[in-house]
Length: 100
Image (cartoon, rainbow, N blue to C red):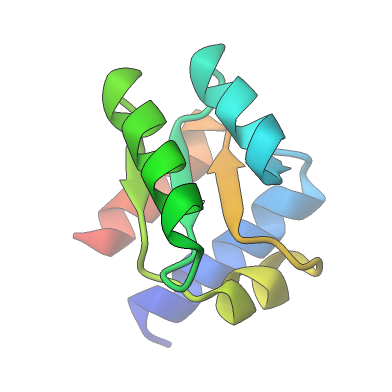
């Protein structure tokens, strides 16, 4: 199993564990409140959404990654989403190590 698939599996686990915040407004709020540790933004998201999330991520020093498509993110967590925030340090650490 490759690292990409492992990260998607971890996203599913994090979702079931209640450690994922999804949806544009909720993710922006999580970034601002310092709850978001790592943000996944769909590579095929709309330009204005990409800019909004990327700018927030840079301002609040939150890592925003665009390695997955909307389809992959949605399949991983079981609902249609373009942006997800991981709020758990353990999941974040494992995902970051898999991304390197």
